[in-house]
Amino acid sequence: MNIQQEIEMLTKEVESQALKTSEQLESFRLEYLSKKGKIPALFQRFREVDASERKEVGRVLNVLKNQAEDLFKVAKDEIETTSSAPEATFDASAPGIPFSTGSRHPLRLVANQLYEVFSRIGFIVAEGPEIEDDWHNFSALNFPEEHPARDMQDTFFIMNDPSMALRTHTSSVQVRMMETRKPPLRMIMPGRVYRNEAISARAHCFFHQVEGIYIDKNVSFADLKQTMLYFSRELFGADTQIRLRPSYFPFTEPSAEMDISCTVCKGKGCNICKYTGWVEILGCGMIHPNVLKNCDIDPEEYTGFAFGMGIERIAILKYQVKDLRLFSQNDIRFLKQFTGE
Ligand code: DAH
Image (cartoon, rainbow, N blue to C red; front, side, top):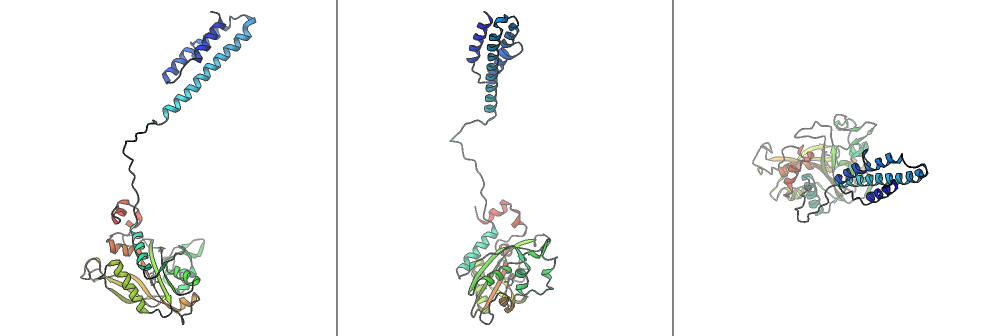
């Protein structure tokens, strides 16, 4: 067989190759492309080709070589990508892959219950910013200049603008609402608040509050007391008692701290209520005339009450949680205990 016939024959052979597996690929390489393969052997013989035929034989030989190399490369790529891809099998009868869903947070459950209870007596929900200016967090609320809450030890101020702080209470939202709306106002304001406290089972550098205000003509302390009694019984049970103790807040006058009868021992005395039968849950009072004036509400025409409570505190009492830190650790085993999921 002369060299030209042989090139023609090999070309046909190469074209008819099925290279589907890595074994087929390897034997193709050995047979045609490797040093001792058929194509390099033809290049050896090419040296003996007559000068008159060299040009044409050289051309077809190179075409054959390129064709074999291309075929090899394409098949190699194909085999490599398909072997590294995951098995494309689908078993419709296999059981589903279970994934765990989240759970409603106990603080959210308490907040939702508060919204529900207060909405029944006409309160709406309002929110305000967590980074607050001095006016809304302190001055408008009648805080004197030297009040300890204005101290760096108690409040997180913003370093590059010390007139701004992380709000220390939701009472700042009272001010924002009174400034922008006209009485009658009946609203609760939930949100996160911040205080510079060492983190322990009983304190954290942030917690949540719900503030409430009711401002209208002739709102009295009796309205405050009745509203507090109503919501306490809705939240903690119909046999709950409340008591108000005189207290001081710059933004209310008179001010009071409110206790409810211990939900655990029903007033008999236990370690939750420290054997007093009562647990403190909120601060409240009649809105100070200076605060109303600061918000352009005439204290001769309108009066109002306000109250503020920690949501964690309510949740701790309701669910008897022993450690405040559990609320912010996001352990699903803890969180799932409150929704019964
Ligand atoms: N702002 C108070 C605090 O953070 C709670 C409070 C007390 C809010 C009395 C009120 C109120 O609106 O009338 O401790």
